[in-house]
Length: 266
Image (tube, rainbow, N blue to C red; front, side):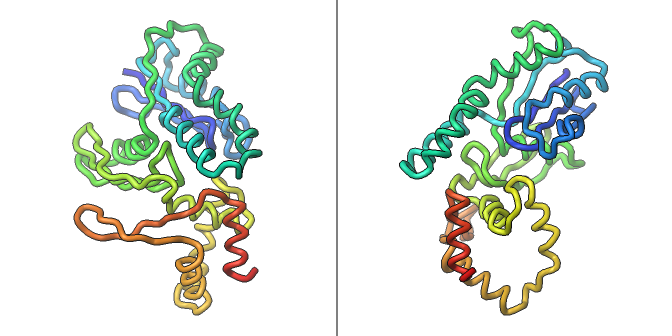
């Protein structure tokens, strides 16, 4: 069985081919376009993977996209509606692209693949697993374990921002989810933005800078206290029978940058 996996229209577009459960080829579009974090449909990456695997599109049994576009579109609409009329300029700017990328994604995939070579659309399944299931699968199926607990954390998928799952044999079950707008990943992205870096790009720079900080310094402790008291709302949550904390966080990066500046008196 040959499966083509595709990630596109967000950041770091990529493609991979799996044959009978083994990864045969994988590549990011930016390696070919030379555009950092290229979000375009990964046409060049797909061509490379097909060539490396020695197969044609007609040899594929399925094409899997990394999330469920309609669920993600639902979240976008509900979020804009919840904050209206704020964000109207962003809404008007992003909606045309969102409609094309999400509502008509099946047609877009067939059109792009058809530009490589002709094939019978009825013979190839299009699959749309949930975003965090895709994350979990990429970690679990490439691991040496036959059974494992799986933790995924990012900004946001369709609605989930973190998940806990269980991998057993060839199956993965998502057991618990943290849902938007509660997101540790978005908080990290917000501080990336606040410090002048590009979201979905500069986070690794913060990761690189973090070890140079002193967690015991009074200034660090003061910042942590300010974040907890003025920037986020932390509430208890029962998870697997024990009480943990969850983060209630932000919908707007520009708003958050202003709020951080005021809180830190910058």
